Length: 223
View 1 (spheres, one colour):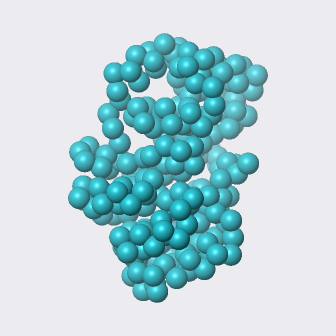
View 2 (cartoon, helix red, strand yellow; view 1 turned 90 degrees about the vertical axis):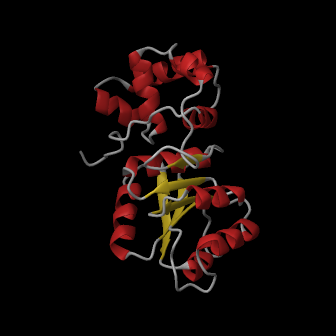
View 3 (cartoon, helix red, strand yellow; view 1 turned 30 degrees about the horizontal axis):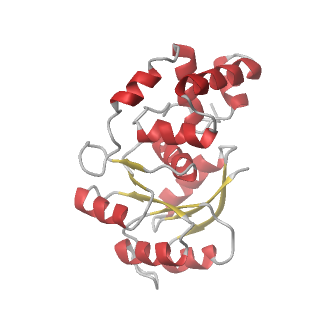
């Protein structure tokens, strides 16, 4: 099942670019775009949405922006997963956003691959906070437990896991690596057994909560 997305940003060119990149992935379905908070709410009331990707500073809408908008969205749509995609890199603001129960904050200076990863992470029930400079609000450094578990994986298994949590399907990974889909599926399943993980959702959670680096160059379907 595809992850249904609404994208919100008051810069049309940026919005168009993000939509183009995310729509190319078979796991994602962009169901609507918005330029302000009023359009976001109108869309949320009209279409089913799993994850909202929204700018933080987006003036002009009837529901405000920033903390005001996020507070309204968390209260009105408690099951909605939210990724804040912003140019603002302030640890205090990130902490306030996190306190609201927002699931991810990502800098626009990051590679699009991180945005794709954040969407899959929050959909799987994990959180994703990453900034250009590590500190408060950044994605945690890998834990000792995480490092120990990933060291059990072979280089090929690690490669498959990194590409999978970056948003590529088994068939796409097989095509990129010039292997059969059965081989890729077996390597993924073997990696999950070594990590003690049974579900894909838990694999996403493990990847992002331990700071496992993702294959940011993987999700390029047009290559």
